[in-house]
Amino acid sequence: MTDFQDRGDTARQAQGIDGTAGDAQDIPHQFIPDQPTGACLLCGLAPGYRKHTPA
Picture 1 (cartoon, helix red, strand yellow):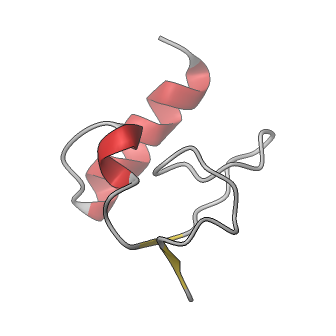
Picture 2 (picture 1 turned 135 degrees about the horizontal axis):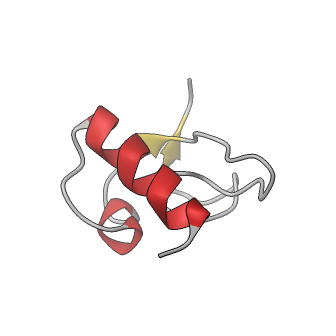
């Protein structure tokens, strides 16, 4: 498992999302940036993805 996957698993658990990054792609959520990738820790996608809600 990669560091990004580990950080994502931790972030999803903290947000109460049970499942993988793919599962989180189906759930509206706030964008949580990962450093250094810049992708969302919850779903792994870019900031402009439609399921990202405003802060």
